[in-house]
Picture 1 (cartoon, one colour):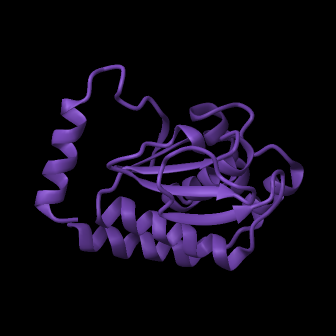
Picture 2 (picture 1 turned 120 degrees about the vertical axis):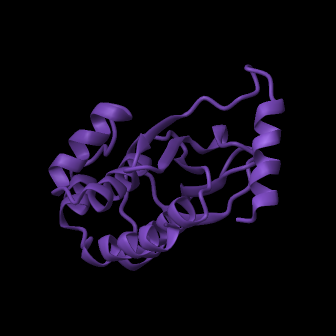
Amino acid sequence: MSKNARSTTRALRSAMTDQQKPRFLGIDMMGWKVHAGPFKKAPTIGSYNVNLQAEKPYGDAPIHHRLPIVDFGLPPVRATSFTLALIIFRGVLQHKFIYVGCKGGIGRTGMILSLLVRVAYDLPGYKAIEHVREAYTEHAVETEAQENFVRAFPTRNLRRWLKVCKWFAK
């Protein structure tokens, strides 16, 4: 992101009134933050929006990346790895405001947030789920299949990718 684009985004955010400023729940990922919730509440400007809905998305927010996951379902592993790598790249290297959401902003969103926490903090799956439930919402990662997906997801290469992005961001 160029300096002009960053300053324009900052100017737009500072020009907003308190009622217009987005209020999102977010999780700190060791220096960069991922915000989440229902996709219909996604910001329309100054953010990188990731939509997790398999059904038709609502709202006026632009969709920059889409990982279609059926409600209470699981995504393909390769597509999930690509999405997580893209979120890490946009957040760490490009300093983008990242927003992740699905229809309700709980199950599918909590699953992706748990995977990001696993990568950022090098935690086992159950600890990452606990962290997201404490920091985001207690109902995150709704089904047992989603919990098992988070626990079994391979994160080694994504952790390497995060280290490379942080190194280049210096």
